Amino acid sequence: MNEMGTIQSVHAATTGYDVREVRKDFPILQRSIYNHPLVYLDNAASAQKPKAVIDAMTKLMTEEYANVHRGVHWLSSAATKRFEAARGTVQRFINAREDREIVFTRGATEAINLVASSWGRTNLSEGDEVVISWLEHHANIVPWQMLRQEKGIVLKVVPVADDGSLMLEEYEKLLSERTKLVAMTHMSNSIGIVTPIAEVIRLAHDRGIPVLVDACQAVTHLGVDVQALDCDFLVFSSHKLYGPTGIGVLYGKAELLSEMPPYQGGGDMISSVTFEETVYKGIPQRFEAGTPAIIEAVGFAAAIDYVNALGLENIRAHERDLLDYATQRLGEVDGLRIIGTSAEKASIVSFTLGDIHPHDIGTIVDRAGVAVRAGHHCAQPLMERFGVAGTARASFGLYNTREEVDALASALQRAQEIFG
Ligand code: PMP
Image (cartoon, rainbow, N blue to C red; front, top):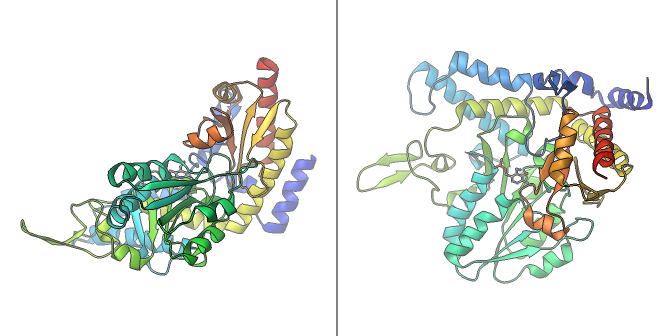
């Protein structure tokens, strides 16, 4: 057995985490691409699905599917139970106080738009300030710019240091009498940097400012506890957490959500409708107009159960090992520059390779069966901050291995030889 195998089996023996067994749960990982075994390193964009998720969705459609909340018949009530049980699973996963603090949305993007449209339109007026950071995904920039257009609010952006870390002192300086909201990522999707979010929240709360946390990456790679963080809003998507697309979460403190007007109108969010007047339901239903993503909610809950069964601690340790190993192995490739070198990071290595265009890097490694992302990763301002148009990004999930990191490093070495 080689050194790598030894380290992995020692890890498995001490934690009970056996990545070889885990991989068997993901049917897609058995396939090959261009006659090479698939090496899937695009988890920050979307993660692959375990059989438990696929089976839970199929079972619902095969045995217990109907629309929820409205029907009195057996199937509708069975489907409603499963849908509402999924809400409870999410609640426990992020340790929310009550299940009504969990609003199902189409994803993190819709969740942020919901807060900007509902809370933002109600509470913000001209000259009010929203503080974001240079690390944000476009999903946590554009909704606030749209509000700026409509309301004349001011966007303040916390800078990052050369190692990609958030400049906390600069953040503190940006907080002013006019700051009405801080909306910040817990972990950058483009360079993997983890922000000191607990401190960010504390400093905002000291001044009575609420905080929205974009936990799209953090929820998968770090785990979050909304009561420990004491955040006011938190958003994430199911599909990066090994669940299906089409569903995500807005967590909001009950007292905040209760004061917010609906985001969209329609069926399922009302208590009564006449042509003169409509009375809305309470939370969370008032934010869930129309038929929700029922099948996806059940798949989402199955994904959370799956992650819980493996143990977030074990997943974190496994991914930390992969990150450290990848940082070392990729560092050995001639001309490779890692963007985001702070120690406060997780599961993502973003890099450039000499003058080779990121798309060319992506295409060459793809021919070796290695899937990485190339481009600006929906974070164009951050790319600008580091003077690059884009990067290639390898992002690790709970099923990746050190051998896969080796496959990436070899493919990059080849790209370097061809283009360098
Ligand atoms: N924020 C972060 C940090 C993300 O990684 C993503 C997805 N790349 C989003 C927001 C948007 O998520 P979605 O596209 O699932 O709505």
